[in-house]
Image (cartoon, rainbow, N blue to C red; front, side, top):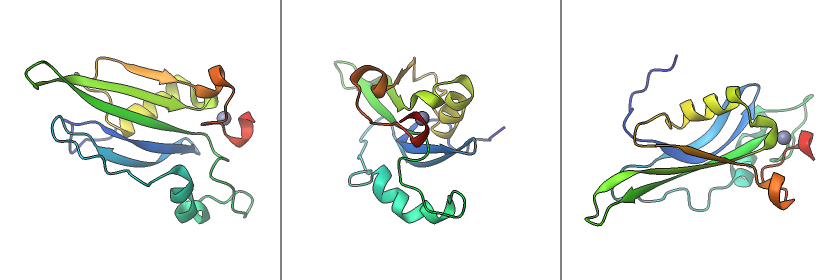
Amino acid sequence: MILKENSNYPYEGYFWIINNKIVGVAAEVPQYNYDYNLNGKTHKNTWNKICNDYLVNGKQVAFDYFPRGRVMVDPNYDENNKFTDYSCLVFLDKCINNTECKNLIVSYYNLDLPSIPHIIWMMLNERAGIEHYTCNGCK
Ligand SMILES: [Zn+2]
C-alpha cells in the first residue's frame, strides 16, 4: 500500500517495468496552467543515464530491452474554461497488458482518481505493425 502525499493530481510520463516494478519518469498534471515539462526527455536518453542500474547478466542492454510504455494525461474544460475531467491514454507493450502491470501503472501515475473517468489502454504494435513500445521479448 502506497500512501499518496499528493492525491489530487495525476502524473504523465514514460516508464519501463523491470522486475515487477515501475522505473519511470513522471510529471504532475494540474487541472489548470499545465506546463508540459517532459520536452526533450525520451526513453532513449533517460535509459542512457540509468542503464548501469539494470544490467542483464552483468551487461548493459538497449533502451528497448525491457517492456515499456507511456502515460498521457490531458485536462478537459467546459465552455467557460472550467476544468471538467482528464483524458488518459496509456501506450504499452502487449506483454505488460495485464491487470497486475496496469495496477502498477495506475498507482505510480496516480490515475485512480474520480477526475479520470476512464483510461484508454493502447498497444500500437498490435494494430500498426510498428515497433513502438515493443520489448526484446516481443520482437
Ligand atoms: Zn514485450
